[in-house]
Image (cartoon, rainbow, N blue to C red; front, side, top):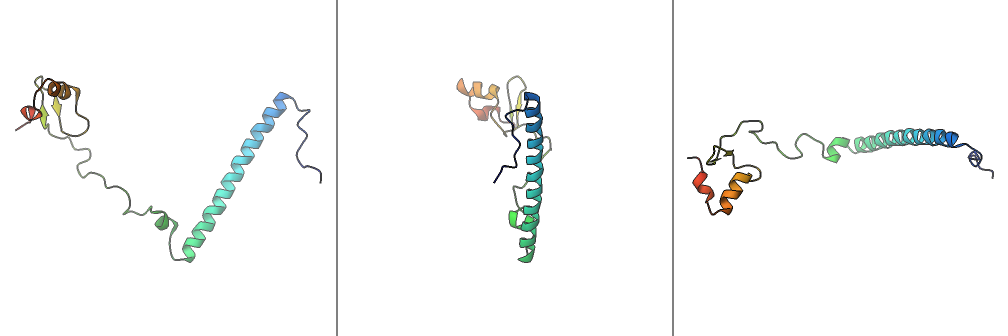
Length: 113
């Protein structure tokens, strides 16, 4: 059976590059088409069993991590350094506090009361 593919041995570099671009576009279009068909088939299967696809994949409103209730709220300083530096106690320990602790100072000394 003869091949349907063109003979590329006699094509110029420019023609080969054009062909490569067309091939990549065709591949992307086929992938999108197959992705859509697969998604529709999965939705139909889930629906026939009484589920939604989001429900099966765990994309409902109750899944995932909760956000902090105080997200975006300015926090009060928990520690204040000798030069007025502040640290809320969240996140990595700041350099000023680390260096003071290395010198033998206790973190509690800088605790805001």
